[in-house]
Length: 138
Image 1 (cartoon, one colour):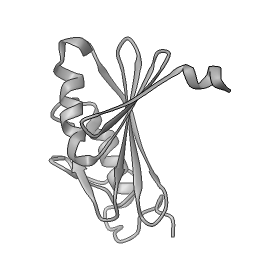
Image 2 (image 1 turned 180 degrees about the vertical axis):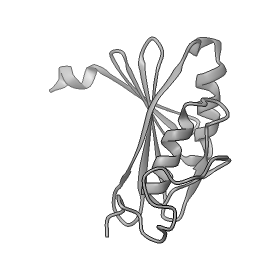
Image 3 (image 1 turned 180 degrees about the horizontal axis):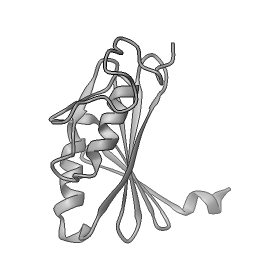
Image 4 (image 1 turned 90 degrees about the horizontal axis):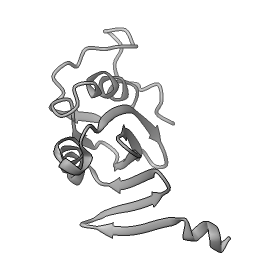
């Protein structure tokens, strides 16, 4: 058990929890600091050639949601963002253009609003569908 705990480096930096294990890096942040983190991943010389891989959201308890962004460079980077009920977060489509499709899908299936998302057409649900979210727990 002690050897397992020693494999993880955990620290907090400006309100962001950073966990490193081998070639994986996990960053737990809030919607307020998320956009700045994404800018850093894209334009920092330390993260040169960092690419966006995927995004998914999970409904947890009491209408709170976790949004997972995955990036890859020389190590795999995951950003976990807690979005409170009725909350919103900034879209990163201007930083990583491939995130547009994923953010549209996540916003359609969960009640999370992405600020700055230019294309808000429905992907999976019919255009006249409104009011309910398929992945929201009741």
